[in-house]
Image (cartoon, rainbow, N blue to C red; front, side, top):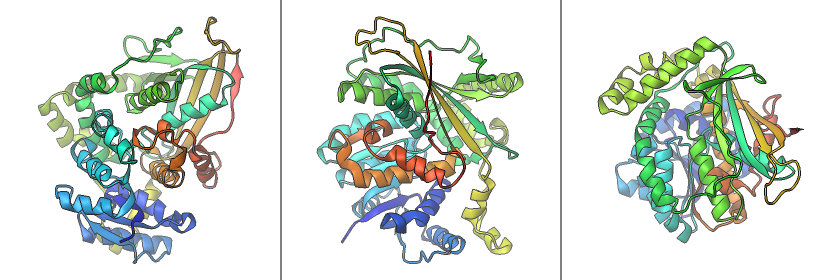
Length: 443
C-alpha cells in the first residue's frame, strides 16, 4: 500500500481544521497526496463536507483514518500510512510522546505545533538517537511557536555582514477592532506547559552534557525587578516573552555549535504592551498564573474558571455543525473570518561587530534591524507555517546537515527554501510580507 505524503492528525480539532483548510487549498498546486485522521469519523466527515462547500473543491475522496490516541495499534497503522505526520493533538505533554515514538519506529517524519518546552526537550532526549538511526526527522514547534523567532534569527544572521553577537526580539500583537481570543486547548497547553517547566533542569542536564562557551560580551536583560522596561525607540512598554521561543532558539544554538561548529548567538525575547496600566495588569496576572500553575489545586482552578483567569479571552465556543446548517455558514470559514484583521509583528535587533574580528577584542558596535509580520498568529499563520515546513521537509531533507533526529526548525530548515516560501506565500495574500527582506545597520 502506497503512503500518503501528509496525514493531519487531530484534523477535527480547532487548530487541525485550519491546517486542513490550508492544505486543501494548496495540495493540487504542490502535488501533495494527503489524508486526515482523528477519533471520530462523524467529525472528520463534517470538516470535509464543510470545506468542500466553502472552497468549492470536491474533497469527498480524501481518506479519513480513525485513530484513538490510547489505542497503540491505530496510532501505528496511521504512521505506516504516511511519509509525514502533522500532529495537531494537544496538550502534547499528555498526547504527544506515543505519536512521536510510533513515527520514529515506522520511519515517518513528524511535525507538530507545540509550544511546550518540557515536551519538546524530552522528545529530543528520548528519541533523537533512534530518529537519526532510522533517518527520520522529528521537528517540533513548527507554528507561531517558534518558527518566527528561530527562523527570524537565522534570517537576521544571514543578512549581517560579519559576526552577530546577540539578538533581541520584540513581539507586537494587533487585534484591530476585535477582542483578543484563543481556543481553550491553547489555554490548557499553557497551564500544563508552565507547570511542567520545573522538570526542564533535569532534562537539560542529560540533554546538554557540555555547556555552550561563555560569551565575551554578554547580552544583559533589559527588564527591571518588576519584570518590565520602556523602550524609547518603540515607544512601548516591554516584558519578557514567556513562550517557548527562548528554549527552541537555545537548542538551535547548541546544534549550530556542536554540529556546525558555529559560535552561538545570545537571545532575549520580549513582547510589547501599549500602556502602563496594561503592563501593571499583565504583571499581576503573570504572578497569579505562575503561582496557581505550580500546584494541582491551582491548575484545576485555572482550567475550571478559564474565562475568569484569561479575562474572557480563552473560549471553548466554536461554530457547531447545527449552527452551520441553521445559519448557512461554514464552521471553518466562520472561525477564519472572525480572525480577519488580527496580525502580529516581530522586530529583531541584532548586535554584532562592524568589522571582522575573530578574537572579538572590540565591543559589538553595529546593529541590524529585521522585521517579520503575519496574519493572526495562533491558527491562521500557524497553519501556513507548518504546511510550508512539511513541504520543505518532504522535498529538501537532503539539505539538512544530519540524516535524521529530533531537531528545531532553525536546525532543520537553515539551508532550505523555507524563508523564501514563507515570504512568497504571505506576500501573495496581503500587502506586508511575513518576513520582510530588508536590513538597516546603525553604528
